[in-house]
Amino acid sequence: MIPVADLKAQYLEIKDELDAAVSETLADAHFILGPNVAALESEVAAYCDTRFGIGVASGTDALHLALRALNIGPGDEVVTTPFTFIATAEAISYVGATPVFVDIDPITFNIDPGRLEAAIGPRTRAILPVHLYGQPADMDEIGAIANEHKLAVIEDCAQAIGATYRGRKAGSFGAFGCLSFFPSKNLGGAGDGGMLVTGDEQLAARVRRLRAHGSSRKYYHEEIGYNSRLDELQATIVRVKLRHLDTWTRRRQEIAALYDSRLSENNGIALPVTGDDHTHVRHQYTIKIHDRDRVKTELTEHGIDSAIHYPLPIHLQPAYAYLGRRAGDFPVSERAAAEVLSLPMYPQLADAQVERICADLLNILQATTAKRR
Picture 1 (tube, rainbow, N blue to C red):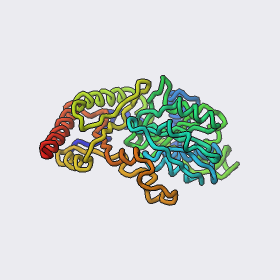
Picture 2: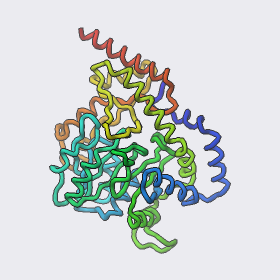
Picture 3: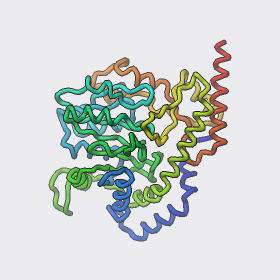
Picture 4: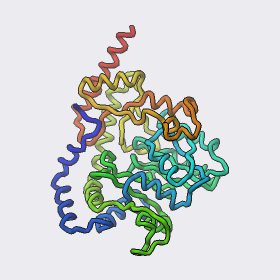
């Protein structure tokens, strides 16, 4: 089976580096907010063209603490996309605020800036765009609207570390950029982990306090906080992988180009599109296709794994039924949920495997077309 992602192949590629780094950290026995966390915070901040990095326990916590640091809470609204992983909306709910959804652009799958104004009201405090699948949202347009309405911007960069929009790195536009080190991410650890990046020293200090039980000095607590510290072992692993990230990103882009070249002539496949002023880091290679579920099943039968990111928009999730949204409210997101299919995408994927995936997918579609005739 060709997997959607192959973490074992990634490990074997850099096994000696990882094993040595982890052994050194175990021998050092400094496991909480140790030197590797501090070093990674500086390295990731520099990589994202920001001043400060704050390591936390997960990408979800990064979003949550960003909202807390901006004093967003009960009675407030945060505008975001319904077509993303639920963590984006959950973080808004954690602080007692209400997510307000805006439909997506049908080409990029990112929040549609042209629909933002209609969603902004007197209780709106922030806009939370998601750079989905590794492609940045249209941050100039989003930023202009946020400035006009005096709203904060929090970027969900969980899938987009290293991506650029008009020459600027994802995570460098808003008050915060929020990263995830979940194992399958482009820069992933061996468990949960996350980071906030920001250019604001006071916001960085607030998050550092919030992640450690509201404390700036041990056993003295200025506010109610959380236990959300990035593990030293995870930081050690991510530091090693950060050294390989640009090489892996280039390989992802090569794989995407090969997919494009082999699949572009089939009109039944809508290929992912990258804007002229974007750098896409290809966290996923996600196509749109009719009869998606059947095609997915047949690919599995051919020994090719695939994934659906995401099968049900957030506004239709049972957890958010209290918002009173219905099918048809965000038709672009709903159609995407019915048609998207992510093909295998990871740096260790061989060209021959991509060729096989494309050939089998095209044969499945041709057989379907023949049956219809």
